[in-house]
Length: 535
Ligand code: ATP
Image (cartoon, rainbow, N blue to C red; front, side, top):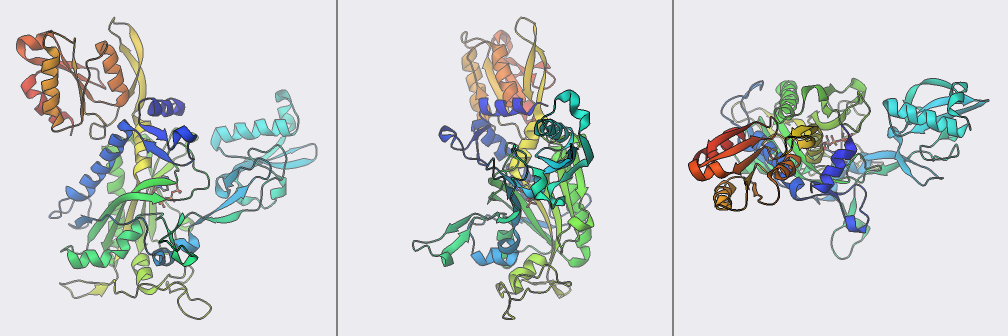
């Protein structure tokens, strides 16, 4: 799939615009246009419905160790600064960056790759931002330029090994930066905290500094006791939240994939330590199934279990659901969602104080004065089982998804080009978004074939009826073929045409976006027919 075509469709048809476009845009920030906002709302709505409101707490769902409760929350973006100190984000939530003194560009240290090239006694590490075939092609082209060689002299360059990460290289003086002409222009890697800082209140001293949340999860942990005390939920149960998160990403890129402001859909699932491994497996499989059910192709989705060395110190298991985004080199996948077994790390940290990363078993990290480095709330966040009277700190399984990454994956999956006949029967290239009907921004469009003979009246009446229930669209302008094309590009699954025959027998033509099949249906059955097909 050609990513440029999707990006241009998104702009042309009002799915996505760069934020502050008329001022030249702001890197890493995106606005959802009239169609985009509907798509994203439908994704969030599908997630909330499937995970929370339609969850049946009376029966164990397929694959679940037992029945469980689900409930929701909507917490603030700015929270008490101590939250981020205890969660570890204040001390640990950073990336390493390198700057290029020549091009003035900034890169994430772990995202640069490259290869050693040798020519005429000079050994240089040629760095690039891409991977796979693309990365290899970039390094080759740049090495030729650096050594002042022509394409046919390429074999004079001796290459060592495959593309490797810049993090494996100590000799930065021998590195040719991705946008530099000279060698050795990259600075040493420097730490960079990804949290956006802000000031609360009018006086605005450093002690009033607060942060925009980099994840929604912490709002759930700090409300764990409130939820247990104010509802009848019993362990095992999950708390879900959808909301904005902010990360001052060093290199926002790949359309909306890595943005600085984005939306997360997170569940913190609280369970007994003994059954936590089973719950981890349940959530990992359940969440993967969700993406498949909404149309992501099996061959482009993978579940990647983290290797031992990738796991956080406290995690007993983490898996990423990854998608083969078309902007990635062939064979590479990008994270859509992470499912982590977090043990009791979060509740304990908010109770006792920030835990020491390296201690085992985990202990509160102490400062030089022997007191906790970051003090916890001191509140009792243990849970008492009413039946067994057992008291314990629940373990947590966290399925953490991004609404924007999901929207991007669904758009990439849906984008396709095929051929369809125009009004004169001539085959034309057709651009179509084959979105799942639940996600499609517009569910059906109503067209009077011509703007006369009472057709608009009938079409409008149908439009008004269906509008009570779904986001539908009325269009009477231009040739009907053109109207179909516009709806295909918007991902509208059904078009309903009111024509001459409608005036005789009150039947309409329904056209299916994907199969292009058309069939007649009586006006009075239209709503039921759509309801059946939009599930
Ligand atoms: P990455 O490794 O890609 O930076 P992450 O592992 O830091 O992601 P998490 O902290 O696990 O991501 O966040 C959970 C989810 O939130 C991700 O799977 C992704 O869908 C979404 N997300 C995280 N960072 C961003 C971002 N900068 N832009 C858009 N979505 C994001």
